[in-house]
Image (cartoon, rainbow, N blue to C red; front, top):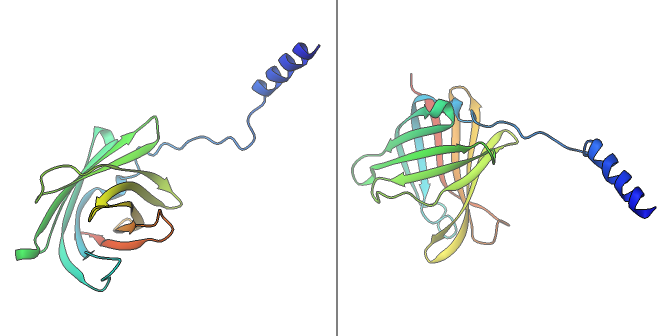
Length: 179
C-alpha cells in the first residue's frame, strides 16, 4: 500500500507545476543599447580604500559593435592624453544555456585578457562579478552597467575586501552617444 501511495504522489507531483516556477529570460540582446560611437568621461580611483579622493579624470571615446547576431559584443575604449593615455577592449560573450554574459577585458599596456567577470541583467542593471588579486590580496569585483536612456549609460567598478559586505568604487565611466 505504501508503494502505491508513493507512486501516486510522485505522479501527481510531476503533473503539477512547481509553485513559483519562473522561466529564465533570454538575455542575448542585453547589450543592444551599446551599439555605436560614444564619448566617455572616466574617473579612476587607484586606491579606493585608503585614498578615495586621489582620482584621475580622462575624456575619451568608445565604439561598440555586435558579433554573432548580438550574442557577442566588442567594445574599444580610448581615453586621456600623454602619460594618462589609456586604451582597452572588452569582449562580451553570451552563454545561452546559463543565460549569463562573460565580460573579458584587455588593457593595451598589458596585452592579455584579465580573468572574466560573469553576470546578467537584474533589476534594471547588468551586473558582473569576479575575484581578482590586487596588491597580493583577493578581492571581489563588481561591475555594474546602468542604462539611463538610449543615449546615456554608466559603468562602475567597485571592489570589496570583506567578502561583499562593503564596496568601494574604483572606476566610473559616464558614457553618452556621440553626436
